[in-house]
Length: 279
Ligand SMILES: Nc1ncnc2c1ncn2[C@@H]1O[C@H](COP(=O)(O)OP(=O)(O)OP(=O)(O)O)[C@@H](O)[C@H]1O
Image 1 (cartoon, rainbow, N blue to C red):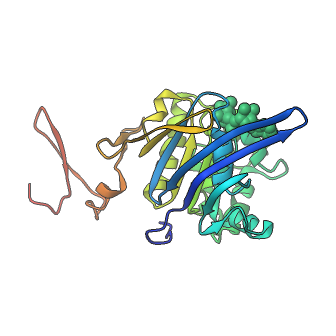
Image 2: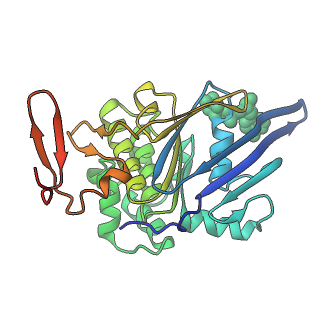
Image 3: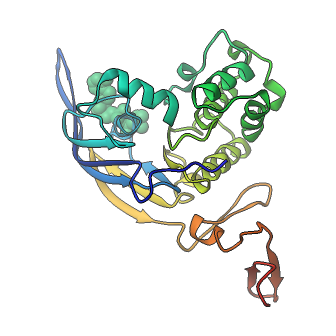
């Protein structure tokens, strides 16, 4: 099911965003003035060295922490001033979040399928079939009836991704969601995140994985708490996953309303056209 974000509105937006952590030993300026927009229907990758502020930024974009200064708006709420209760409701129903320590996102006492179902219900999407689909998308069908303690670290990470994506939340924030995965499973998780973006969600992930950095719509690089570069990507490239599925950017996808494609191979250039178009 495609999500229906607020027309024309960014899912998240910040200006001069600052995060300062204070402790007995002093202050850490994790973010020093970030300005960006998260648009529905796109996947943004945030990269940067360890300690550059990726987790701090993603945690705030997921409305799980408040800015020290600057403005942050998430799904129409001003995160600096919104009530705790309001933000909790937003997080539960409209934001999918995979924390860096993904094991903390799973409920230890519920079988995989039951916890995906529970989160789906919070988002107004009921039914075992939907939970099974979410698990299948990350290759966990065979583990549906297991408790988290019986899952490997990588399987728990994929379960956390299934929980984040089920019920089509408008905003999906995933902090290094492929960190514990081999190439095949990382591709599966990335394909699921790209599918969510193609269905209309605003998706942001952080990654250190060179294979993943260039596979979103946009790559943001952080350095010492500031954005050091922003590269727009998928406007000229599309992604082919390990099974041969081609992921078109949303603006091209609309040109294939029947979701069927004629492939013309003239030996040099491969062309794709909708079957209803003249060759
Ligand atoms: N809760 C906290 N209390 C104090 N300092 C913190 C806290 N969280 C993060 N920091 C500090 O803020 C800075 C940015 O940390 P952050 O976790 O955002 O970086 P990161 O780019 O995600 O790093 P990594 O790639 O290692 O996960 C670091 O110097 C870190 O030590």
